Length: 424
Image 1 (cartoon, helix red, strand yellow):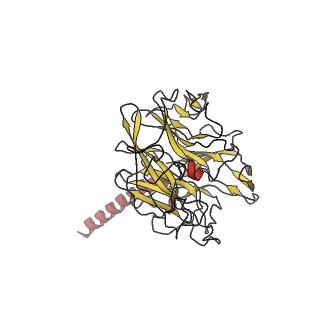
Image 2: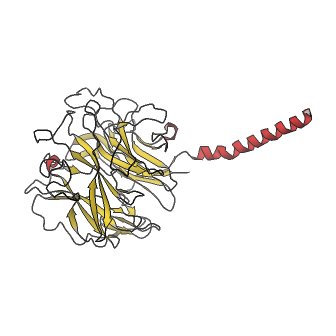
Image 3: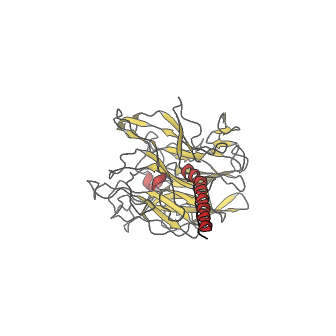
């Protein structure tokens, strides 16, 4: 009897050992690996690129087409040229295109401003906070031609008042940086993650936080109609607490979960007239929608999965949904409390826990950071995508380094860079 029990125990032990040997490498291989860092002589043409079809390696970007996964590119001008006869001072900033994976249509959002004689050399004119509005263009032939160029207006509204609480010439609606990418939900809706300035009771721009600007995140949601147009609606705004973030909610980035929840991660800020010493915690913020993006939870600080907070400067970030089903967050982290926009390093990537929607601490990989000999570094402007051939995450951008000069000239050096991250 004892001999039989001993044999049973030994067998169980062997099975357990074999089990752990089998899953050990799997657990280890879930970690992200910085595969390569390239320093091309010119900015990568993968910036703003996306695949043109549900399968295959054809890619498109503003002004370009690649038949071979971005190895070579052909010039592809926008036709017709909607902007060629605009009055002096008018602006059209065409964002990167979104390809609807179900029907292949390309949607391009254009940040527009119709302000006569505005100086074109001003990068971010203050009047933009009152005047920016959204237009859109649609292509059904892979970006060779576009059917129209029209204002984005909610059904039942007007171009002068395109959404509830938004009035052209009084308060702007616009997109943030490259992380604010369009998604298609499993319901079939197209969501444009935008942001809008808020009006105070006196009709002027509100600034309850005392920061440089004050915006709320606003999802502009489109549904295809028969003439290749989108019928637009808007979500409720995601509004920040001015006691916690001095600039509100900025530059939303989105990812849909397998259960239909939509995660929105946003930039906040400290600093400004009401927080001159930047004592407010420099958190990244998130909100969740369970109804396709129309209503959102109250924004909370994004933390690690165990609830531990982390610091992040006021900079763009990006949620990237990988073909494996995993969701990754790319952005800047800091060991200490930030001062508004700074420091914008290191650049990191980490996996989002799909249950808690928090960042998995042990998954965080430092992609790049400031070297001792560098007097400054900005790693906050990038474009992330998945390479369909290798399944790598590719991040293209620039290393804005050395001393900051001014808003018009930017950083004194900005060499291009391309990072490749293996996703085992």
